[in-house]
Length: 125
Image (cartoon, rainbow, N blue to C red; front, side, top):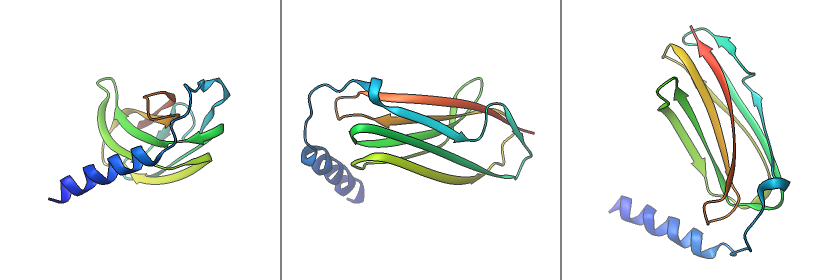
């Protein structure tokens, strides 16, 4: 029952969004601030993930993933449906996994599947 409620709520949000013309992602700026490329952490460290995005038009949300490399197995996934031109998010995560990993951020430009994505690799030893 709860799952059905969340599915209905998601579609209500989607319907309430204004449908824009096809949006070009060339005006989208997306920058991962933390972690830096190839940064090394120790197991059980608290890792700070931070990104910023801006656009001339409103975004329709974002999603980030923490992936284990080389398989790209999803360790953590988080997303939010929102409507704003600027997004600035910070997340803290404690890794209990070892190895090479990737932080992947995707900002949703519209409800038609258009997005812009950036990634950064890091390692937990």
